[in-house]
Amino acid sequence: MIAHPSVLVRGKPRPAKRYGQSLIHLLAAATALFVSNALAQSPVLNEQLQTKISLTFKNLDCTEAFKILSEKTEVNFAVDAGVKGAVTLYLTDVEAGKALEIITGMTNNAYVIKDGIVRVMTGDDYIRETGRSFQSRSAMLSYALKHIPSNEAIAAIGQLGLLTAGGKVSTDPRTNGLIVWDTPEAQERVSRVLELLDKAAMVEAIPLANCSVESVLTTLQALVGNLARIDADPQSNRLIVSGSPEGIQEIRKYLGAKDVPPALETEFIALKHAWSDTLLAVFQDYLTPGAGQAALLNGGRDLSLTEVSGRLPFLRGLVQQLDVLPDQVLIEVKILQVSFGGTESIGINWDVLEKKLDDLTIQGRFPVLPKDAPGQISSGVIASAGDLEDEGYNVLIEALSTYGETEIVSLPRLLVTTGREAQIHVGSTEPYVSVETQLTQGIVQNYERVTTIDVGVKLRVLPTIHPNGLISMVIEPEVSSVSRFFETPGGSSIPVVDQSTLLTEVTVNSGDHVILGGLMETEKRKTERGVPILRSIPLLKYIFGSTQTIEGKTELVIVIRPRIVSPEKGSDIETETEW
Image 1 (tube, rainbow, N blue to C red):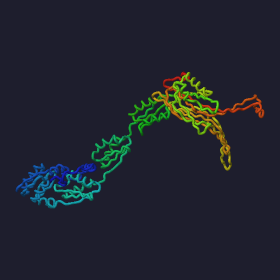
Image 2 (image 1 turned 90 degrees about the vertical axis):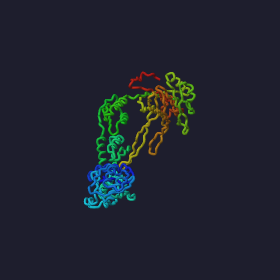
Image 3 (image 1 turned 180 degrees about the vertical axis):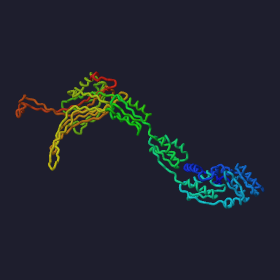
Image 4 (image 1 turned 90 degrees about the horizontal axis):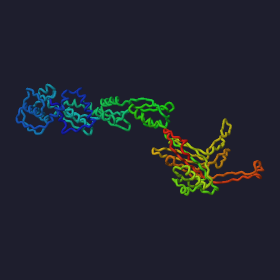
């Protein structure tokens, strides 16, 4: 038998897509279940009988002709004793399988293929063995395909050598079907193969929980080969797999051993300094997502750490870097008040003052709303004075005294951690009463509520120490006072507070001074004079005493000096030079 050669497709077969190749691999594994052993050998024999040869015979005995075919194609032939006939041929560049068909047809002989051997017999013997004539052995059948493209089915039939030498196959593009012309045996093989091929491939999305799709994609593609197609979706960390159940099973088997939670270790670390929740949150940003955990114990003195074993050395080193006391900033403040004689004063002329003080440098200005002039904007000032020691500070006091009486209102000092806000309040807490009405069981009841409000001078400073030793400060001073009270219809007395505020940010060296000026307000002071005791008696006080109201303006000057204090170096704040 000619080993089922595919003289069916003219020219070189088109390469199948990956989808078709995967099905061909499945088909090759299942072929032994229903196809003879000759089918497994057919690809080689198929190639041999497709060899192009040229023959010139003149009245040559057919047995000699079969001998020459065997020699040219290296295919084994077995010729029965009853085979007779002579042939005259002039063939050029024809396939060997086609020449075999022509010789057997001219001599009324036949052939079958078994175990890779072409057996030639008489036509009568062929009828006795098969029950039909050799000439009527072929038939045409059509096959409708649902899932596999027709060109891939043709490629599979050609690669497996399912057709005989005279078999042919063509495609019907209108219906995605196949038309096959061949023997019933070949038709049966094609039918069974197409039944396996024409099935929808399985498609699954496999999410990965503990490893990335990039880390397993190359290994999986080499593992399953053409049994399945694998695409990676890095955003969702999923594998999109399409192919045979066997291929998908192999993928899941591999991932079952690969995509497992990493080995975790837990240890407890004693901290030198108590950690805050904020510092713990910074540390947790470096843990493995979904695996690493950290918690504070013993009031923040101990750290419980659970992490992938390979990352523990790095995290131990990070703990050592974070487990230090942060540098602190000593904020020393002088709040000065300059009082002017009348209400017409425009305040301190900082441009003139800058020329008087060599170390004074104006860095910026800001708007200030005076309380006695609604809608009018004057200008405050931000200045730096370098390292203003005692002598320079006295010069500043003298310069301010030329504008009015200068006095020190307060000298607060605060020690604050870098990145934390410091607040200073110099003034008073003013109470006021508000009346609230509540209806209880049909009875109206009035309640007095006492509320307080802070007025005076408030100062908020947020310092940040930079690696180069500079200090950035967000400074927000506020000057406020109660100017009057607003009486509500319900009897409540609500204070009206006038205030001037400033928000600025400066960067200075440790020990330098920042001066804020221009925060002005108008004040009224009452002065009582007269004869002691008698001026306190009603009616007589108008004879023996007098009251004088003096109005004037004041300007607050705030001098801020930040200094870096390192707890690790044990800095002694008290021994620092006063200023």
